[in-house]
Image (tube, rainbow, N blue to C red):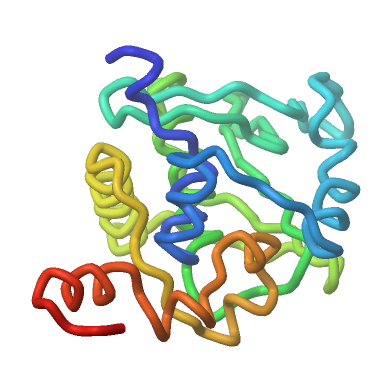
Length: 210
């Protein structure tokens, strides 16, 4: 698989959160920061520096490159801890998020995709990992069960299909998602959700006035 065909792990989280957001970032190469993204950058600052350290028997690798060619995904893990059990190291990925645990599973899918990459790279089963949320300052353990693995693989397939189509989904305003999104001014979900370009074009083709 060519590098251009590899899907960034972050795109999976973006897709499950909002397919239009994913397309704006990964198809149209658009980006904007707000307070939430700035806080996220600060939280990731330590994890974005590649290094390895060992403490209390745990080897910790930050900014670890990840790749699973069979699945066509690539990216970087914030932190991968290697815990020694009976003399054998076992990988445990940790993803940093600025907010708090969410109702949707986008963060869990991104973390599970990291585990799938580690399994492909290390040739071992990765059973669990953790999400560290900046607001609660606590870890949320995530078990990579069959349901989450299936959702992750389906998300990879759906994201690939959307990116291959080279089409950005129509805007649909949802206050819970849109008001926190740094791309809201670029996306214009309130305006385009009411007067979509698709509907306008159909009316013009039918000879109707806007």
